[in-house]
Length: 443
Image: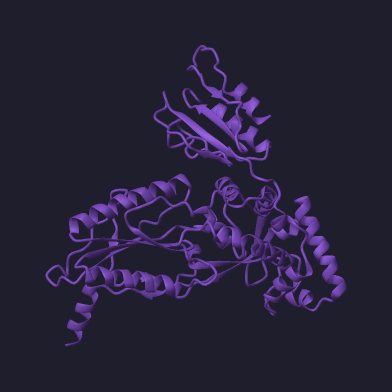
């Protein structure tokens, strides 16, 4: 039993020469009520070695353990065990006691892990676009679109077998990457190219069926401020909402400060162990979570040039699959627990903006700096990287006397660039200052 092994693992050990004492204990109450079991861990004296053993122990029993910072056993890197909800307080390394309450979750949900039907397959195939490039298996979309009834039954059985056995063809996890040059960029700079991943068509169909099953479950747990790739939400909604909130600040005689965050290679830097943890908290079907993580493991790609040359096979250890229909949803799950801030958040997948309304410049700048510190700490904890050079700030107000004053927001002791008309989701959000200067230039 996992609890018994935890007690044995966390038992105190004697002091050895040249080593610090690694005392620690686990108290497992025997009383269970309404399917809840309590796990209490004393974090005093935990070492990285013991935490690593605990990680593998939990993994082998169908759970994932994530260390947020593998340096010191403080409240910032306490274990996060899927299925356990933290109910106690963590005080310090010496005296901290973390109490987790485990909710027994069914391993299989019939609505999520049932056999794939012809209706699901037909709906997924209807979204395929003819003329698209094939993946490594060289199967074109037309080959699947024009199949007959017999093939439909065989495909349903094949996809169901792959799902139930957690077994996928190796070719499905190998992508062909084509680098397209960005406009007005140097052809000699590797950063001047946009990589496009070509995935296998049969794998895309399976992903769409998985997406259709988990979308209602995931969507119900995403925060309202996240609009990325959600049914009934669009980029226009987020831009309109941001502009409306700025206009409301004018009506209340307040100033609005906005920071437009830019993440470096957001999809490619997703920590798979962290994603596994958050999926277990979001989707009430462990088999479905295992299958999703199976699609993200042992992935590789080959870079193809326009002349037909190919690079050697490269392995991918982290990140979600580029070009996958599941990737935007998985990324939404990965950042769905953004910390609370005084600023209002406007998210569209990895495009994030925060806005704070305050009557004075000082209050606005202090609030934005505090919120940015909170968000940067969260991003670092989950291995996401903020591009300070591309993150910009803007101030919106009606004061003509302060038209030239710039908002001062710092990240890592660096002042963010201030723009008068920054772009958000493809739209320019023009400030009062930019409007005044534009009118002055036309007279």
